[in-house]
Length: 248
Ligand code: UDP
Image (cartoon, rainbow, N blue to C red):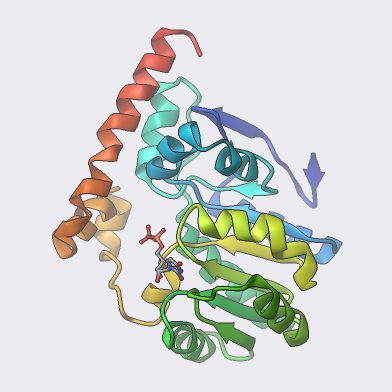
């Protein structure tokens, strides 16, 4: 497929497809999709997604039907190297979102924030509008709702162009694929806990740690209870090595 200036070359890693694009190219592609009209969505798989997608076919399907799939974290880049299909590099979903929001502020697009605990999306909206003057946040909603219909209607009534969705995986991916078109929005991206970071509730690693590919380690030091989740990284690397040996 060719969208705007970039053709999307998909690379499959352990059954999940990724776009091999730089962060700038990801944002340009998203902007082209938004301008093209219709509904599109993006996903940000990390090593935990890869493991979950092996067992959960519905999750794997919505990941692979996404218009844009970015390797969220150094673990996926390691997997790509082990499999002999190296990606250009990681594209953290939160960095992608910031650049997209900056573009939206410049081009007058309307942003909706959906997800996280009550109050978080509002705090994230405040941060983003202060950081990107001219940005229109047309609505917010927490991520602990029971019925989809009122949320779909709220997004539709807001006239949003783009929705940042932080419901955790795989809920956010399934939600975007199933309900995105009915909202009238043009683009959604699943971002896990990014709204908590924008709201200032969760701190990101300093840039030097990020550049060194050690953001996961910083996060572990700050939130030791994540050890169970992070222990999945070595497992996914072992699976990648096994797949390589089997020639897949
Ligand atoms: N979340 C939500 N609704 C739910 C479950 C989770 O809005 O039913 C939010 C949660 O408050 C948090 C985010 O989803 O903001 C967590 O997502 P995840 O753990 O995937 O994010 P990560 O921390 O890995 O970025």
